[in-house]
Length: 228
Image 1 (tube, helix red, strand yellow):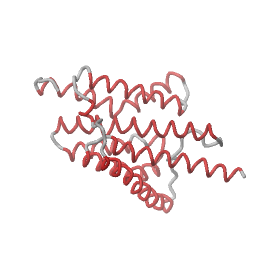
Image 2 (cartoon, rainbow, N blue to C red; image 1 turned 180 degrees about the vertical axis):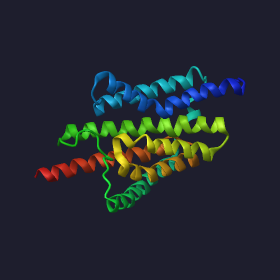
Image 3 (tube, rainbow, N blue to C red; image 1 turned 135 degrees about the horizontal axis):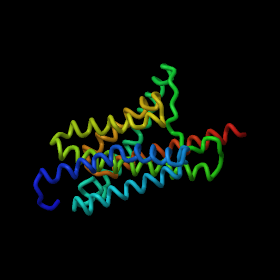
Image 4 (cartoon, helix red, strand yellow; image 1 turned 45 degrees about the horizontal axis):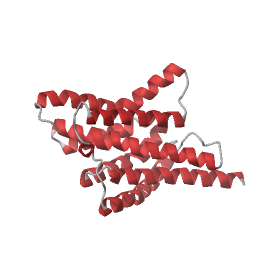
């Protein structure tokens, strides 16, 4: 980063952190209000890419920083293996958490992608697009930018990791419900811990993307079996 006083850097970082943490939620709310209807999953995915593009532009131009400052660097073989391991552990955590959710009698829409009533290639394609979009864009926003900049402002990795993970979970309430939050909580902790360990955004992206893709595939197979 270019040499500027800390007092000049912090306000800029606070603006970026606000965009990273609340950009998706505020944007979706505004769009739904303007069009008086819920945005389609595909439309919402496109919007998420636009917000991430805005944030990346914010890093490169106003902040005059590099993408490596938000964890976007080339992964090595260990990063890839950790990402795959994150997927495996994440699935186990979801399985265990789902047992608790079931025992509590809570409902969850986790894994829904807006194509639950359809079967076929289009359903899988839309599900994969929405799932991969969520994995990549959410990791850039929460684990990459928000965590890194919050840590820079507060000088505390624990505070940055905890706050961004909690907000990541809480802001999923509208689309996943209470049960979904219980399933997402261990995933948020795992994704955050993996990123803090490796400091490479491709680690949580790989784990997150594989989990989302797995959900889409399982949903398609389930619907195909139900339609037989």
